[in-house]
Each structure stands twice: as C-alpha cells, then as structure tokens.
Image (cartoon, rainbow, N blue to C red; front, side, top):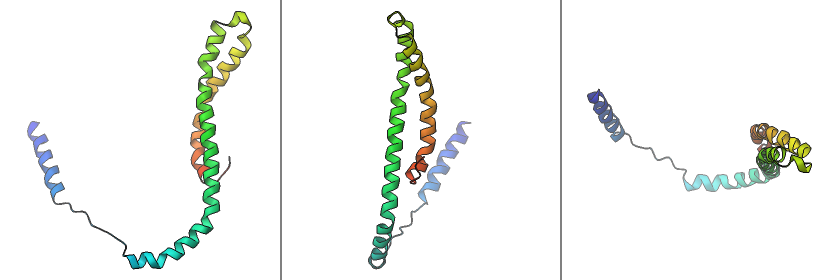
Length: 122
C-alpha cells in the first residue's frame, strides 16, 4: 500500500513537470479596433445592467430582512415561556410563526436572486 502511494506521488510530480501553460494574448491593434464597438455595446447595455443591479439589490435587502426575521423565533419562545403573564402570549405565537417561516422565505429569495440580477422583478 505504501509503495502505491509513493508511485502515485511520483507520477503526479512527473506529470506536473512537463505541463507548460500557453500564453494567449490579444495584440494592442485588435484592442484599438474593437474599443469603439465595445463602447457602443456598453451604452446600449447600460440601462439593462442598471435595472438588473437595482432588482438584485432589492432582492439582497429582502434576504437581509428574512435573516433578521429568523431572530423572531427565539424572541417568540421567550415571550410564550416567560412573558405570558404580562399579556405577550398572542404576540409570542405570532413571532414564533414569523420566525419559523423566515428560513423558507430566505431559501425562496435565495433561489430567485439570480433572476433578479437578470432584471426580472419577482
């Protein structure tokens, strides 16, 4: 078993020694020729990119709200267990439900986030 490990390590080292990376570069003339075309494409795409970033930012904020709503679960348990004599039983059950639903809402918002960054407002 020990010999197989040593042979495997030697094979990995030897195969790595003969590997050379290829350098692929674009010459400056091609960049100079394509720059005006790229600027026109950027001007056309700018409104769509901005819309996608706005929708994505809203989705990220909703995910943050869902993360904070998870904290309602221990608050609700505290209200139900310790503070029910002070009339907080009903709000405690409400907080437990909201805090229990928040992870599922977070998963849903996480799954919809790539669509939001594409500019689809869900």
